[in-house]
Structure formats: C-alpha cells, structure tokens
Length: 76
Image (cartoon, rainbow, N blue to C red; front, side, top):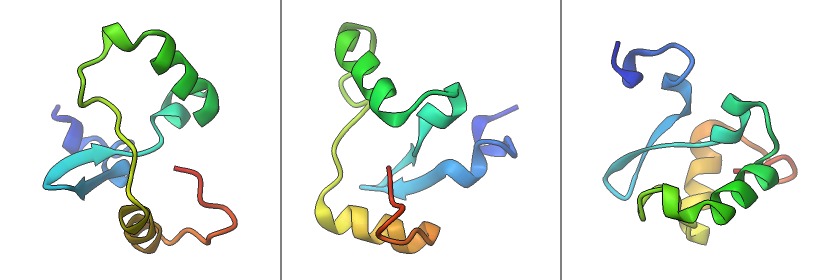
C-alpha cells in the first residue's frame, strides 16, 4: 500500500512548495512535537537534508486555513 492510500496518513499529507509533506509526525509516534524536533536535531545525520524545514509565516497561515486550526491551538 502506498503511503498516500493509508487512511491514517492521508489527512496529514498536504501540498507545500510543490511537494507532498506530512505534518505532525510526532503524533504518529506518540510524542510531543517538541520532543520529536529535539530527536531530529540530536540525530540530524540520520535524516535527509529535506526531511524537515521551517514554514514561512504565509505558509503557516495557509496551512492553518487548510486544516481549520484556530490561532490559539495551532501547533505544527
């Protein structure tokens, strides 16, 4: 099965900068986003350079609109 066909993954896949990206991988692993980010930083050599990137303010706002998050609860 392709990842894009998975009912668990499909709602988490978005198009950004012309690429398919997944948001909130931390939730899939059952950890907080902060701890997930720390693990990536500690093990950066294990991940491709394009594995994680920061969103611009405009990209963040567009994604909040797409997934219907309020500004108070947005944590991507």
